[in-house]
Length: 364
Ligand SMILES: Cc1ncc(COP(=O)(O)O)c(C=O)c1O
Image 1 (tube, rainbow, N blue to C red):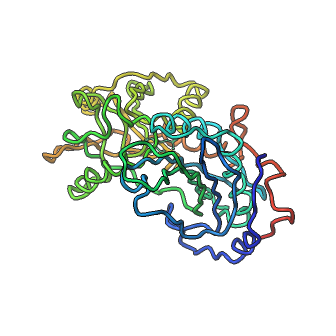
Image 2: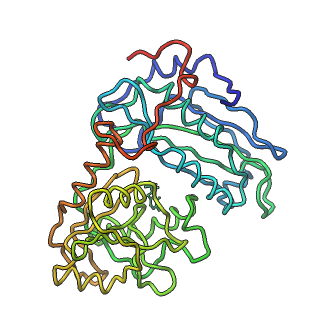
């Protein structure tokens, strides 16, 4: 445990927080936040305090050059009193992978986890307890150096904020095959979680929605032939009973959910193959029924089936099994583990160590 300053109003902010009935996903701002600063080559101690506006000079580098990274993870409390986390060390590892790519300092595991543990433990009584609900946690790091020089910052802030949330509820999706824009370049930043990747994706999504689709399906940036991922989720298809997912190329983000689904599918006796997934071949396999279902997955949505793929010219290819029993079974298995109704592989579900809780027990 690192040294952490706890602002005296922290618990009062949690007790005074009123959770509305309608949660949405990531819409609500939680009552408290954690932050720590990096300066002169060192991380300082953390502070936990009521959520407030942050102060930045208008020339802070994050605002001009987008030097920023983030993670997305959840604290669960379904059918239990205590909060738990799902594979949080994976988020820490990916955070540091993002930091290296974006010329930002890596963060020690104990400081990253302190932020996540403190916010989840202090907010324990406001973590919604319905199945699919959670406290969505958003660790992030921004470049704070006040200078317009086009060089990497020498100053950073690490923060953790939270949002009581529903799982993103999406009906079986209609997906536009994005043949014009790509999400990320080879050798670029697609394999890490930095804000610019998301900003660059919004135009495609808006266009997809204007054509009546829900999301965009990204193809590879070289020749727009192989599937990369779906919006901000990883992609799976069932072809001839085999579960297929794109091989990581460096330009797609390797999800914690993706890795977990691959492992659980193997455990359920499904053959899983990571390979290049040619979009035109997959369309033929959808048309002749060999591709029976397709789905996407990520922390927010968990697992979501795909109903149809479509093109800019209006062509649509409907999946034989749009509610997919394989995707339903995988989602249920994953959720049962995350929500502690079933044992998963060792080490997937973590309690929060007692020393990160407030000295007085948190009551509902
Ligand atoms: C671009 C992108 N792909 C995939 C994912 C799924 O990753 P995870 O399962 O770790 O949430 C995310 C979400 O973080 C994402 O932003």
